[in-house]
Image 1 (cartoon, rainbow, N blue to C red):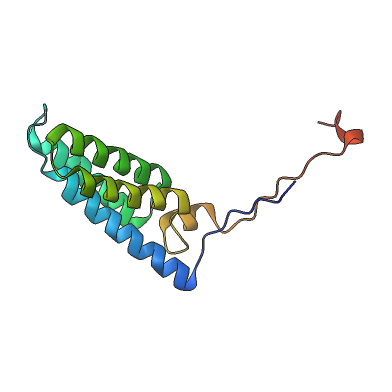
Image 2: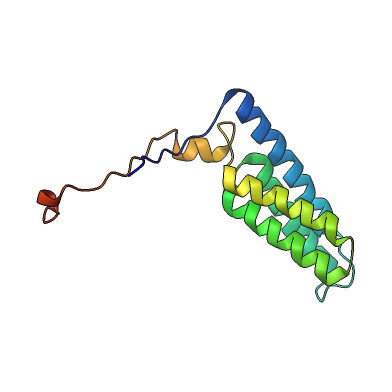
Amino acid sequence: MTRYSHRYPDGVAGIALVLLRLGCAWIAFQGTARPRSLPFPPYVSIVASGALAIALLLGLGTRIVAFVSATAAIAVAFMTGGDVATMMARACGCAALGLLGPGAYSIDSNLFGRRVIRLEPRAPHRASDA
């Protein structure tokens, strides 16, 4: 079985993830803050998109927020009838951030630390140990 390690990359990769977070925050705010013809008042979407954008900027709950932003971008594209191809590209960028994680320069990395998680199979003779 392969070993799994979850890391928060720093250096050039960390800076690239910061730039990706900035881009996705802009997408979250711009793409969902002013949608036309939605069934709820405009201030609700502005507050929600602002909260998503701030969470992405700071790197707080990045994986979940990025997937929510991707879902919102797809929903807005189909509900408003806007440029579906552009919103799908934006959703793919947010999904990529959700898969990659926030990087070392985020609140998530400070909260959860830089840990290595190793998943190793248990030996058969230790199967009954708790």
